[in-house]
Image 1 (cartoon, helix red, strand yellow):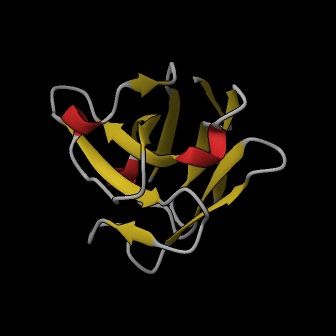
Image 2 (cartoon, one colour; image 1 turned 180 degrees about the horizontal axis):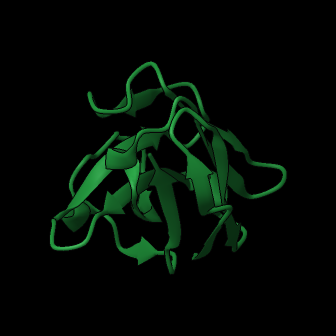
Length: 123
């Protein structure tokens, strides 16, 4: 599966963005899809994960209550809605795919990655 992330940009503190992860391939609905983010000089960390059918999700504590991950398997797309954005949300956001059902939260479980989209939150 090939992934392409989009939707990043610059937003003010308290604003919102919706990121999209578009996938090619006929087996998209067999993959859990995650969003990770990486700030300059820091590790790549999990933001949210959604399972193959959209019925299970996981959110990192840092974004819980402010982020919503969803998917449209008919459109081969996963979305990440981010609200109440903070300067500390500034990072490159990557989507990634992991075959199968479990909600995995570490990068080593993801074999397919999009190119990343930059989110900048100004104070």
